[in-house]
Amino acid sequence: MTLRVAVIGSGPAGIYTAEALVKQSGEPLEVDVLERLPTPYGLVRYGVAPDHTSIKSIANYLRGVLELPEVRFLGGVTLGEHLTVEDLLACYDAVVYCTGAMVDRRLGIPGEDLPGSVAATDFVNWYCGHPDVDPSRFTLDSSEVAVIGVGNVAVDVVRVLAKTAEELSATDVPHEVLERLAGSQVKAIHMIGRRGPEHAKFTLKELRELGELANADVCVRPEEAVVLGGDFPRQIKGNIEVLRSWSERNPAGRPRRLDVRFWLRPVEILGSERVEGLRLERTRLSPEGRVVGTGEYETLPVGMVLRSVGYQSVPLPGVPFSEKTMTVPNAAGRVREREYVAGWLKRGPTGVIGTNKSDAAETVRTLLSDLSGQPPRDLKRLDALLTERGVRPVTYGEWQAIEAAEAELAKSLGRGERVKLVGLEAMLRACRP
Ligand SMILES: Cc1cc2nc3c(=O)[nH]c(=O)nc-3n(C[C@H](O)[C@H](O)[C@H](O)COP(=O)(O)OP(=O)(O)OC[C@H]3O[C@@H](n4cnc5c(N)ncnc54)[C@H](O)[C@@H]3O)c2cc1C
Ligand SMILES: NC(=O)c1ccc[n+]([C@@H]2O[C@H](COP(=O)([O-])OP(=O)(O)OC[C@H]3O[C@@H](n4cnc5c(N)ncnc54)[C@H](OP(=O)(O)O)[C@@H]3O)[C@@H](O)[C@H]2O)c1
Image 1: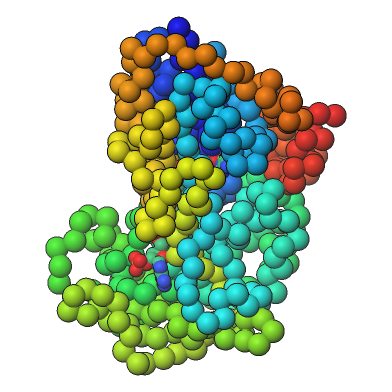
Image 2: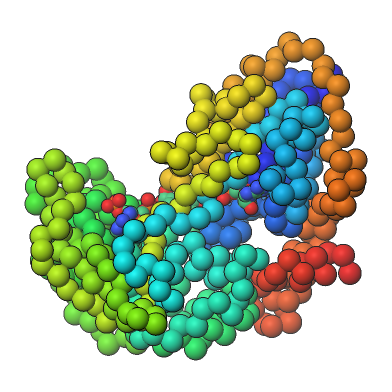
């Protein structure tokens, strides 16, 4: 009997799930990876910063999985739009949901919805050329910008704002986005942490990169860099040391300035028609370790606020979802009979790409143990169902044609190895001329 499994989502979790299925199953197997976009790799393509080319090259490994004979890529197929859970269970022995975390967490402060207050999810999608965001969406016409949050996404956003367009020219940033970055008026970037340097979520390697920016001076206030006592893990010690050394630096007069701030929480985004400022309150920790305000305020004269306070998953129609944890409740990956989950949808939006490998392996162990020894099912064929509904999936070969068009575009513009095509129409034109 051939085991048939549908994996929903082709980010790292989905592709590592497909790989684990092939590696762990002793039986003949067919794995269909269904993806709402015409392109695979999820946040590796539309999240990892364009200038982090070595991390992006993990796509070469993921490609190898999609090229396994047991695995098939079907792009442009959305669970909840083209297919229901019932459809999937009629066509496959099991389904694994790997749809990640696509939306931003909210701050819940006045002014959050003013024009100029932007979720990092949207800004990242913009510079990564995600088809959900138009390349004309952002014009960087403010001289001062605040980035709220001190995680690795905030660091990515800050770096893209601080670099020159020339520095980003060899990356895959869409050409219209690069032109907008070239016209940026940004002079000062404020990165805001609501707790101290010892609590920041960014990793040491990523933090150090900010100190090497050719186009921006990095400044830290000595009084905010002070960390009292504590025997911290190596990474955190490293962060504290780097921040302390920056607090002793004198600005070298570079065109842009990055202020890394701590112990400040946003209380209101100011402005009537659009963002005109950000009101912050100084914080401290309560004896229980909670962030509390001190009643001391300051206002930054920023025209743009980028909220980088974490991603969150969205419920899939017909799939259980906890509004408390914003994940799909599961036991070692099992959701219900024949339904499984992996990746950010399973454990929340934390962890690096590699974390999804062991996570997917756990889910696959549960799945294969549940299904072993079960009698064969009388399953329908997904292809017939999609044809009936007028859905023509993007094949792996068609995705390769999109990649070839992106390489061609880069060559014609004299830029790097690839320049992203933006918009579904352009991608489909490239693969179905
Ligand atoms: C901005 C950013 C930068 C990052 N940079 C790094 C980095 O440099 N290094 C690192 O190690 N980690 C990085 N990470 C973390 C890493 O990207 C994640 O750990 C990883 O992508 C999570 O994998 P996933 O498969 O669960 O989700 P995703 O990568 O989000 O994949 C989910 C996939 O599901 C698809 N999908 C969604 N809904 C549906 C649906 N209804 N039907 C069909 N398909 C659907 C989506 O289109 C997407 O392709 C970064 C994360 C972010 C947010
Ligand atoms: N290069 C890389 O390896 C890379 C790049 C990008 C992303 N990633 C990974 O992807 C995951 C997601 O990253 P992320 O940066 O989105 O999330 P994150 O690491 O959870 O950081 C979120 C930041 O937002 C702050 N925050 C949350 N709510 C806030 C509020 N209401 N007001 C003010 N600040 C608030 C948090 O502060 P508190 O700590 O006080 O809550 C924290 O500083 C992480 O695991 C990250 O390491 C990795």
